[in-house]
Length: 489
Image 1 (cartoon, rainbow, N blue to C red):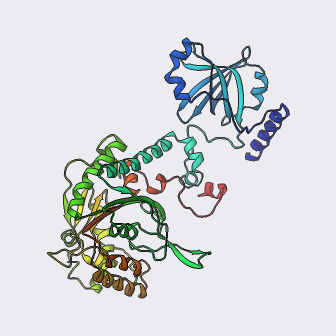
Image 2: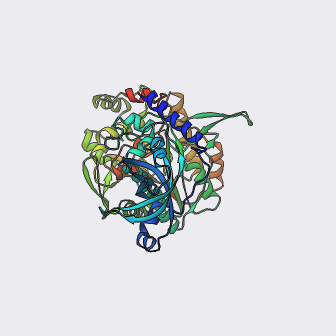
Image 3: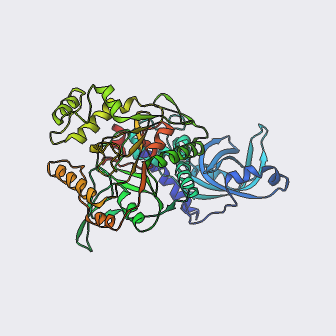
C-alpha cells in the first residue's frame, strides 16, 4: 500500500519535471505569512493588492472547475481557491497536487459566499513535493512510541503538541527573565568534564582523541558554577543539557535541560523565599494561571508553601527514625515496601529509596521538604543546630521532586572528607557515588563565600502540562528501530 503511494508520487515528480517545474526549489515567492494577511485582510481587499502566501496543503476539495486548498504555515491557515477560468493549467495542477505538498499561491484576497476569508489564485508555484502521506487528520498517530520516534509527523498531526512546545520555550524564557531581573548572570560551562560530579548519578563516558583522555558528559552544572563563584561572580545561572545514564520512565530522561543558579552571601532560606516568587512568575507566564491540573490533582501554586520535615514525615510513614535505624533495618524496610535494593547500598541511599517510596508520593500540593539527613546530601552544608541534618530543601509537588536547593558546603577539608566517603561507596559497587574532584577542592581552597544554590529540570514543565516528561522533549532517546518496528509496539 505504501509502496503504491510512493510510486504514484514519483510519477507526479516526473510530470512536474517534464513541465520544467522544480519540485524542490531553493526559493519561492512569498510576501508574508498567513497571519499577516489575515490581520490586514480588509485593507488588502480594499486595495485589491496581490499577495503571495506559502504553506503546506492540509486539505484538497476538487469541485470540478474549482479546487479548494487549505494551505497552512506556522502562523495559521487560509483557503486558496483555484478556479479554471482564472488559473492557467488547472487540469495539470489537479494531477500533481497532494495533501501535504508545499505550494506558494499568488492572488487577491476575498470573502466567499459562505463568509470564509480566502485567496483567489492567479498563479501557483510548487514549493516542495511530499513522498509520504500525512496521518489521518482526525485520528493522527495514537501509538505513543511511534509518535515519539517520528516526532515530525506527530507535530503535523497534533497542533496541541506544537502549542505545547511553544509553551515550553516560554517556560525557559520566563525562568531566564526572572533570574536576570534578580541580577543573575547567565553563563555557559563545559559539557565534557574529567570527573562527573555535582549529583548522584551514573555518567556517560566518552574519549577525546586529540587529548587521548577519557571524559564524562556532565551530570550536573554545580561544580563548575561554584568555581565561578570562587572566581568572583556572586549571582550566576546556567540553563543547559545534562546527561545521566539511568533508566527510562515517566519522570526521567538521560539527556535533558537543567537550570542551576548560585547566590553568594545568602543561605538556603533566602533562596526558598526567592524561588516561590520565581515559580509563581514562571507558571503564570507559561500557563496563564496559578492553578494547574496534573496526575488528576488540581494544584494551587499561589500562596505560601508549607514546610514538611523529612525525618518527621519518614517516621510517620514508616514507624522508624531514619537517623537512628541501622543499615540492616533500613535494608529490610526497603524490601518490605516492595523495593529491590542492591546489597551494596549503604544507609544514606537506603533512606532515600524508602523516602521516595513511602513519603514523596503523598506530597501533592507544592511544599518545601526540609530537614534532610546529611547522609543523603553529600554536598550540602550541615545545620549549625544539628550536624546530622543538611541545610537543604526540595520543592515537591504532585508526588515528585521539582528542584533541590542547599546552603553550599564551602569548607574544603569537610568537602574532601565527604568525597572520600563517596569514593568508599563507589568501591563497594555504588555506581552513582561521586568521584573525588581534586580541581574542585583546589578551587574551594581559594575560598567560596557563604553561597546557596538551586537546580531544577524540565520535569517542572512536564508537571505543568500534565504529560510524561518523555513527551515534552522533541526527540527523546529511544531504542533502535525504524518505522515498522515503531508501528508494532
